[in-house]
Image (cartoon, rainbow, N blue to C red):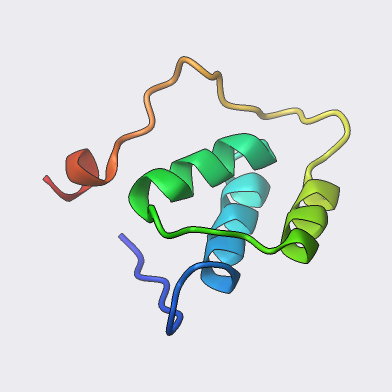
Length: 79
């Protein structure tokens, strides 16, 4: 487990975690944001960060998780 801390934790820290999930775990932007928002309901990326994350997403990803794959909820994660 990793703790990502930001004073308010709504935009920059969310973007950092999304970028990690996209780069190293093969998530699409939408999958990464949904995953983070499930764990951090206050997540709210600003428009510039959304654009940057969308540019980070590869045009033809080679490793994309399947939508059906279970992503643990915050409660499941901390059990």
